[in-house]
Image 1 (cartoon, helix red, strand yellow):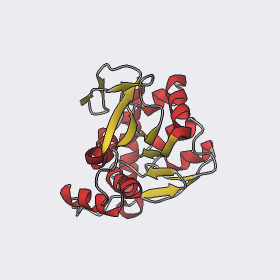
Image 2 (cartoon, helix red, strand yellow):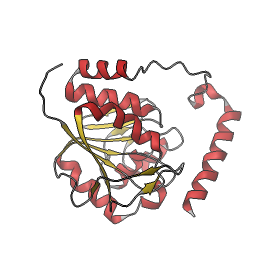
Image 3 (cartoon, one colour):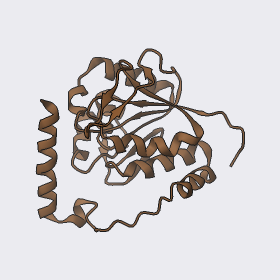
Image 4 (cartoon, one colour):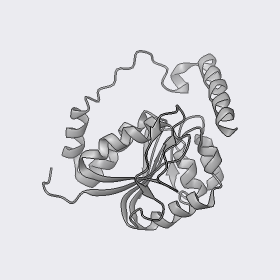
Length: 220
């Protein structure tokens, strides 16, 4: 691992109703090596989809123009900003000057809505992945998808895998390995139901009903 490298400049989009783990997983991975800008329209406190408060540190106006990583998380509040001209303009403006344009979970749909995934392979939460086709992207069933300088992660917990992949590209494998060990990231899930392929139809149906209800609640 090279010493004394400049800190990475990372812009991480915030918005009301985002899924906190989409943000915090990669933010934790990046934090030792980065200046992280939590970006929203204002610096007013916003709340995640589980009502945890997050304080933005930058606005769209004062976020650095050139970034190493531009990042969008997913969440039940996402539908409200899929056509938000300020949000889409921010993403479209920063993307050409960012080394990597990235997302976790359904944040990839936000990138798509900003015109940033046309002709790229990408992934998303399993329930939203096929929606990428509407934006000219090619959906891929994978934990992390790298296509040129677009890097997208799957649903929620994939954010840690995503973060380690991106960190390795920008600061080398040793930095990513050190971070993984420091986080004690050695998952052993108690149930083998982490994807629709292993969960089975009954649990998938229940999960879809639950998420639809949550989406409706946040749309109100």
